[in-house]
Length: 156
Image (cartoon, rainbow, N blue to C red; front, side):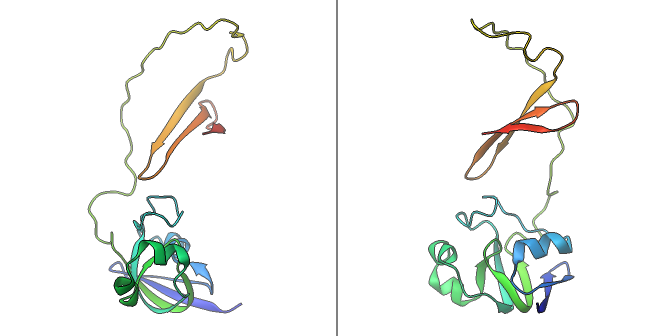
């Protein structure tokens, strides 16, 4: 398969990827910052990038989110556009201040005493479980996590 060289500005990070690689995947591989608020679903426009070079034609998702005049000027969705040859990419969020991830230093532990009838209270005896909640731009995800080993037990 052919290769493509993708450069991310203003960082000047360059990565060589297989032709057909989604730009957000290329950004991750290069270590470039490219926000994907909807998780790559192609619905929010938050991963907007200006592209010059060889990329795939606009997808129906891109045409639904990006006005035609901006598509014509090279605005694409980083989660949908694919590098088919060499390309230069500048994210709309490029240069945005702040870290990609925010680490919570402290947390308040709240107690919620409940004793529902019919619950086998010994079923999870000795297990340390926690909930991780991700409040995104377009989605809400809650995960049940085993706190001893970090395994994700369920997702809703």
